[in-house]
Length: 124
Image (tube, rainbow, N blue to C red; front, side, top):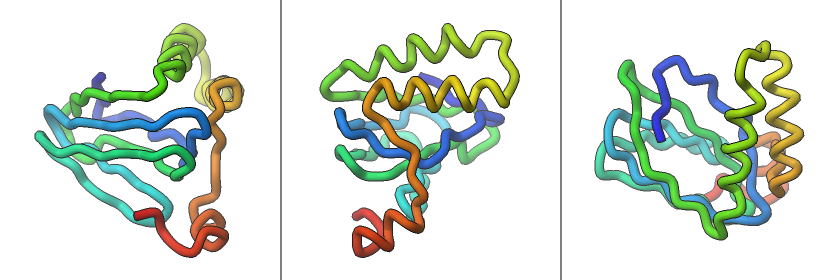
């Protein structure tokens, strides 16, 4: 997958049905989990367990390329549906479409500060 420098990061969210692992090939990706921010460059990787809030963005001025592994793999349908639904729609509509698909794929948007307060601090 590739994230362009002008990529609009998704709202911080958590998955109730799958884990994610990201392996960065090129560029630099900034991962945020709760209020903890980590920059990962080529050769680095991040594991996002079920139930841990996170988001991501391109931290540099060049495209960031990575491999994402999701287990179980049912969440791949989210990206397929999202890419088809987003073609030619406004930014406002994108948010509504994304939120609806997140719910379908056992994903919820969270307030990172409230999550940390309720769970005893930032995710490890």
